[in-house]
Amino acid sequence: MNEPVPTLPDYGGSSVTSVVPAISWGVESPVIPPEVARAKHVVVLVIDSLGWMQLQERQLRAPNMLSMEGGPATTVAPSTTASALTSISTGVSPGEHGIVGYRFPTGGAVMNALRWTTPAGDHRSISPPSEIQQKPPMAGVNWDVVADRDFSASGFTEAYLGGAAYHGVWHPSTLVSTTRLLLDSGRPRVFAYYDGLDHIAHTYGFRGEHFDMELSFCDWLVGEMISMLPSGSALVVMADHGQIEAPELVKLSPDCDALCRGRSGEPRFRWLHARKGAKDELYEAALGSHGDIAWVRTKEQVIDEQWFGPEVTSAAARRLGDVCLVPFEAIGVDDPGEPYAHRLIGRHGGLTLPEMMVPILHAMV
Image 1 (cartoon, one colour):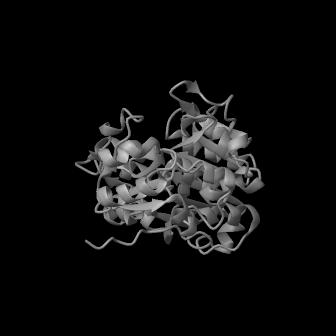
Image 2 (cartoon, one colour):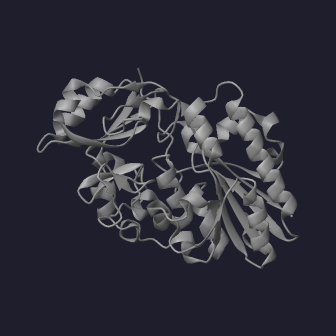
Image 3 (cartoon, rainbow, N blue to C red):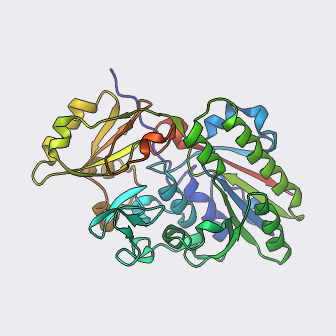
């Protein structure tokens, strides 16, 4: 079969990386009009896992969002929360900020970036967040952040938000009231984050009423945000990535496994780390065994094709594996280091359209 064309990020164009710099500094952006960037108050609401294609397929569930201006844009590679939220915050690609995926090697172990842990436990003393991610969060400008209180002291929050004023909320509905209180106190820029849709998609996929009902709730949240905005304000609604249903995990072929010293990444963007001297052989084995279901690339090819952006720092490059498997079929690639990955139905991280395309919408009041 002919290999499909991957959907690559439009870094420097219609991408999630252009939102915060436009609002923070007035940097020209194809997705944020000047009047939105210059508004007296701007709220950016990130709805985790709100894919453009899923939104278009359920228009009756999202009247508030579909009444807004804007359209689709690309997220980053890999299309996963740790990389994408950091790119939204910093305005740069994963190759520059260094959070190159859900799990990557650092400090002698493969670290889960969202939890900032390895199998040995908390990894902050070995790989401090401020050293792993050194780009200025929120584009170097003061923003207030409104999100779940459970994330306030995490290593990943430190990495992607730095010292931004964090206002932890107890319940999704209080995202709205807390945001309004900040605007009433004169705060000009608020970054709000909600992850309920992502949890539902991972757990149930798009079957039955679960995803549809959660999308309706997200649309209610957007409507309440718009209704409480003071005059002269703007709301931007966006996502970090989309998602697909891919419950099946395939095992790495024995030929590939014998040439690997480890794995990182996630099921939809699996990095293989070659045994010494076996990189070329591993690439050929992966292409022969898995090239019919996945894009197979070496690290050098990924960098040359700018999957991680036009610039990849030496530190970021060291966190990549030697060969990657990025499925274009609706499956994931297994890793014994992720013991609970088989429980998920919805997944993301890959380069298919439903994973890569997200909405960037805006409304003025």
